[in-house]
Length: 114
Length: 116
Image (cartoon, rainbow over all chains, first blue to last red; front, side, top):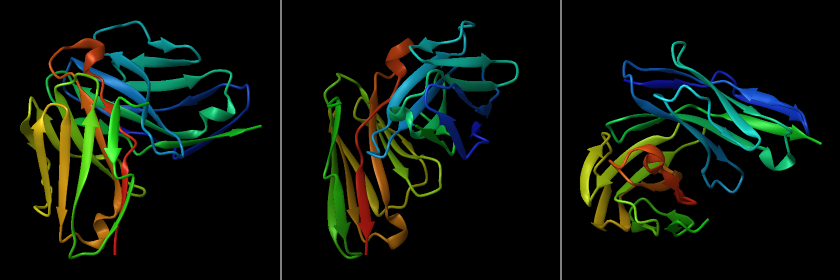
């Protein structure tokens, strides 16, 4: 079974600085999707960024970018120019190409210090 | 974000009660999901419906009973729950089988359930 590991339960960053959240996963599949979701105190799960495994280019969404290392099964999230509104739980998730089951990591709580 | 809505947002129930959670998606998706989020545990997938047919049931106790009358609506019927069932229940939807960005799951705001 696929597993997703987020080794950092908590991270903090100074406002306007850059922070990287780590995620590793275990799979035997070659095609799959990877996601980062953000869950602020409101509890709404919001998609931050997604990556398709067959794409070598790292996904980027404004201040959010990923470092996808397929061979190492690593999928880290970089947040540049951190803002107070970035404070939230961040979940890394994996989904196989041909199945419904999305696996989530345990999450990383990000604190942004003013 | 109004693509996926859930009601009620908060629910307190006794162990002998029967209640239902409702989820509605306005995104034209064909797949819907129920997740359970407990404190200090990863999100757990409970049920998956694809084109109104249940395709996944991850060993969920029978006191949780899902219903999907159409592709836009998903219910979770609750009866004789236990205190350990207290959690945030999240609904999500996606366009299953379409590939690419449409495979992304979009979540509702969740129902916070407390079982006394």
